[in-house]
Image (tube, rainbow, N blue to C red):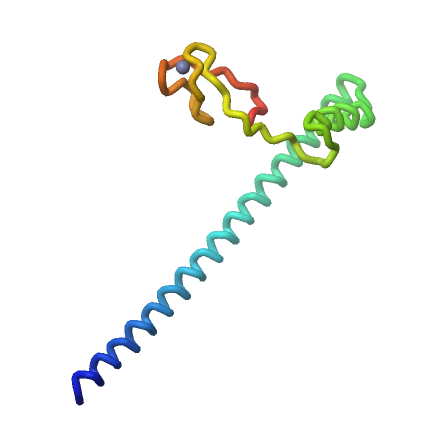
Length: 124
Ligand SMILES: [Zn+2]
């Protein structure tokens, strides 16, 4: 066996191992995406149950009708100027009311001056 033959064999083994590793990574990624989708579906189902329960409660105890809900939902949908069944995205970064610097998303305090950030309960 020549040194070229050994190197060629090593090269083939390395390429085969690389392909196996890439295949394994791809399968791992696909499985995790499936788990993420399943988890999201469960979250959506749970939110639908809670929403329907809340709406049933409000109708029964406060006398609202479905048309009242449609009007409110459409008004919220139209905030961004189009009725498309989606909430408007808020991409504008918030500024700290105390120091005026850009606030990090989802942090309860300003990173620069420590001011407590008060956000709306539906802010995303
Ligand atoms: Zn600040």
